[in-house]
Length: 84
Image 1 (cartoon, rainbow, N blue to C red):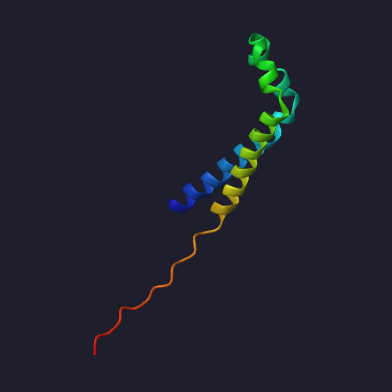
Image 2 (image 1 turned 120 degrees about the vertical axis):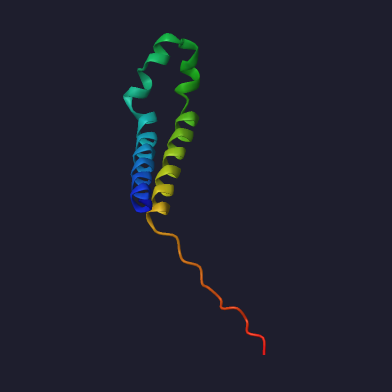
């Protein structure tokens, strides 16, 4: 079960990261409900810095997904010291 949960988490993180990486630079970002109904948000949401921050979060999600793809390294066990 742990392997299935890990695989689903990796897929979810990768898909969210890809979406966040692409979405701010698409036409969907420029023509959406919030910009049509709240014109004062246009200056904030269309600023390249905000788009870069959202894309950076997407890149971090993708790196996190790749980091979870590999199983954690097993720690080396040290046998207890024997008392003579």
